[in-house]
Amino acid sequence: MENILVTGATGQIGSELTVELRKKYDSEKVIAAGHKRKPSEKLLSTGPFEYVDVTQKDSIEKVVREYNIDTIYHLAAILSAVGEQNPQLAFNVNILGDYNVLEVGRKYKLERIIIPSSIAVFGPETPKDNTPNETVLRPTTMYGITKVTGELLGNYYFYKYGLDVRGVRFPGIISSETLPGGGTTDYAVEIYYEAIKHKRYTCFVREDTVLPMMYMPDAIKALITLAEADISRLKHHCDFNVGAMSFSAGELAESIRKHIPEFVCEYKPDYRQKIADSWPRSIDDSAAREEWGWKPDYDLEAMTEDMLNKLSKKLK
Ligand code: SER
Image 1: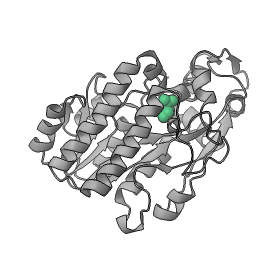
Image 2: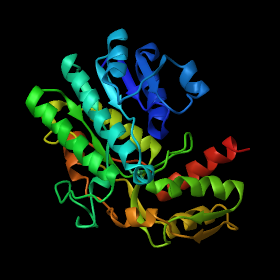
Image 3: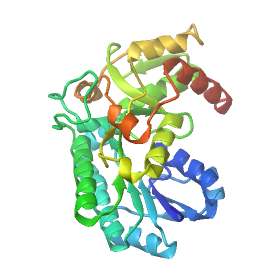
């Protein structure tokens, strides 16, 4: 893993992952790639940046050739809520994007490809509590369908072509650096911004909606630890459940009220409630723990404290 390309580097996870990889490896050899969103100053000043459209294989190939890329963290994707507004776009970016990255990986014999998946691979028929790694995968969102396809394609390229593809099923990711772009779990990020700015928030899912969540430092740790794991220990490849915490929207608001007592949260469920209701409440991540030593550091209280600290400085 010497020359690394991060697609979706302007996104919620990509922006922080790129900076972390640049600290860990030679920063000039970690190439950030974005498409629609404007890259931040931090992204531009810490290493190379390229525009890549993952729906166009040539666009990926050009950068892979130019920088002699051996590893891709493929994070470019359309999230669940935007995916329901525009399923065709989600299909193109997520399914064609994955396929193009895998094909480039096969052609250039890349050393490793990391493609995150999501709890959105599960659906209404999946057991909701402590959801096993191996279970029913019948999602009802286009986003979920693209993520199941990504997992299956990644596993296929591993067994068929020996391409080392790996991935985790992320829960909702919470962070203070870059906003997520249209997911169902975005309320768990917005609530912190609004609590600081206006001491009020109108949440788009019901108070009793419980979903699995993770704080960004744990998400970055999961990706890098899995990418570096000894392959001989891996029985799974593209479909590891990873858990950290589960809470209801009401419990999240309560954890904020411990720091901002006057904070008021209202609940006005919209179309995203149905998506949230189709996902698990908590997940069993014992395969990740056994095969590559997964262990999260943050629970709800620790995350809330850190988020409020970081955002109060940022929003001053
Ligand atoms: N956080 C994502 C979403 O809500 C799930 O992977 O779309």
